[in-house]
Image (cartoon, rainbow, N blue to C red; front, side):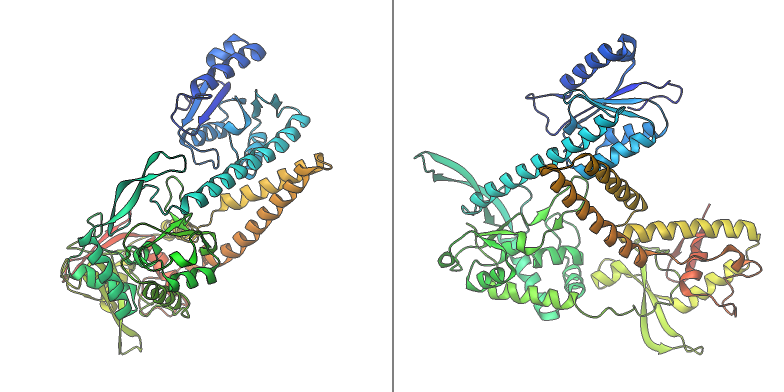
Length: 539
């Protein structure tokens, strides 16, 4: 836990271990050795007052650790003057993260001490040596990762199930097999669950008929079909099933497809005879607290498994091409984009969001007529919710009239507008996977690597630092490009003086997004009950 606000500055200890085991350097042993070091160099009183931050069961590959974050938050409050760790890789195994951390601690005037390597950032040589050591820590980490991949390649040849959450349509079962040393060993394989398998087959058939993830989702929910976890299907759940090669037969069509994609296939082509399904290893990137991400197909490790396939390779390949075609369609601006209440309007029956749906008709002003439709009603085709659609044009106009009648002084309104703008900006950054902090961190990491490079005149570490700098520079360039696409339009406060953005007939030049932002500055939600709407104002 972090220190009290009234605590004076002190030396703190950070300890980390990847797994909860009794072997090696436990967090307890790390803490004790750090305390001994503090007592020897700073005195018994400093050792007794040292605060401990412990992360057990967390990897050093990134900084997503609760007690580490708490420690850095306390550092920002100037609660201590130095951090002591038992060994350098306890704080981080990633050179970029490490360099950024050292730079930030330096800015906060907090020293960093690693007792195993005898590094102390209070001296220039200590800082330089620490950067170089972190290079080799990351090199060790990547070497371990390579060994894991080599081991995975060998496991792939067996086609076994390595554990974890089984895909829809399958469970797992153990089986015995003779090992090379003559002994009998145990392993796991997927086992077909007939009822779930029928649902998976229906998903493939429906998608091939409709060519639409949304249409497939709607049909499944209308029929009351649920996911393996018992929840209504989303189009993302549908896509996950359609793109998983575990359902495809290991046959010539699948072999040709993955060979063309550059994936690693660790089963002889002759064994891709359609008898078994495909096992795909190294397919996802799994990070604690984050959704799994799919790696590029060229990084996959494939083999014929020991389970019954649910679709033939040709069908699976056809589905992938259809998914790819849908992804590559030219982006079209959504119809009904003049709607002002998306994200605010909720169904009074099921509390689901209501989205605008345009028609082919226009009103007297030449504007497209549109309705707000309950998303759950739409997905389930009225089975799970039967809320009456709202006349979107009339509802938007009604909300604007209510807001235009509010007695709000300009100063209060502009203040609310700034808050709404801030929320929109944060949303844009989040949706784009961007962060201002990430950009600042990248700049700090590049500066620190440049400093380390100046100290390292030759040798393997120099080439490794250069490669890392190049990688970070590419990340920064990509981040800058994405940032431009995620920018929220700035609206000078003086632009709003003497003008109400809520008057429907206003001749003031204002975009739909500007009007939406003004509405969000004052309204928290709008609930539609089928005949009228209830507006909840922001506090």
